[in-house]
Image 1 (spheres, rainbow, N blue to C red):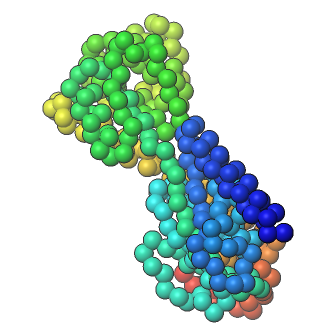
Image 2 (image 1 turned 180 degrees about the vertical axis):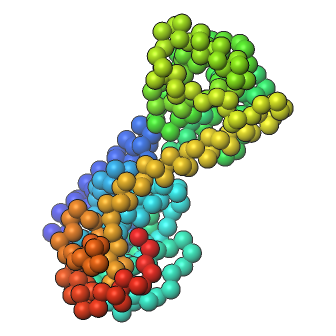
Image 3 (image 1 turned 30 degrees about the vertical axis):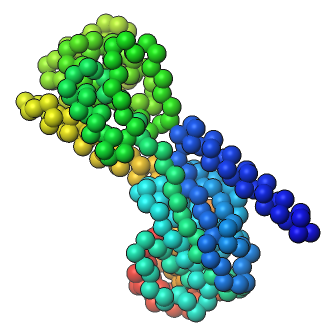
Length: 318
């Protein structure tokens, strides 16, 4: 029995390691959740792991039905902000323990009464930034981007025909400044997942877009070009590069939040105990003043129905 358990654990570890390698290779964001502490009785043990993809799919084991929704929700939040956190799922009687910075505490009403500490570690691939051009703006932009965590490089004219791209978190700034502008934009736009910005005055940008139309590029493709990059005009080379990068940093954060928000809407917070509940699988529900509420168990639902106003007035984050 012991040998079989060890072999099964090894297979799971290998499966998760291969999955993490696969996600890293194709640039897919994910989270590695690891059980670091247990207080019996629980169905998990220290060292149990699961990988959560950005679509919420969970592979592995970090406990049963009480802990899984909470882990999935915190994993999606971690992917949105890029920050690790400790998820503490406390047993009965521990609901009022104060939280610590970098941790999220939930009180479980699971009959087992056990507790879990689970480390949520987001694996978000470094974003890619391609600075097209052999100009000071392109060179400065690539250096600045590396300082804030981008995998950045400049793209010269001779590289346009062999440009390859991996992953969806990719950004391009065409800073060719009058040299092969149309060629650089055409090469960048050939990659559907690449966000493209152009450093140019509005008048020059209109001329470049006209040239691309003459090449046969449609309006939907041309609409992907943001110009001027960073909104910068009439300033120095360093400031143009900085403005273009600042715009990308802001847009990237906004888009990560937009990707996470629909998935986070699949979860509700039990108004009685604060546990995460998956809305589409919610077996325990109640309506009060036209609002639907979801519960982790029938016990929480009964408490709510005894005095709904008490729990509705309590401030609990969704």
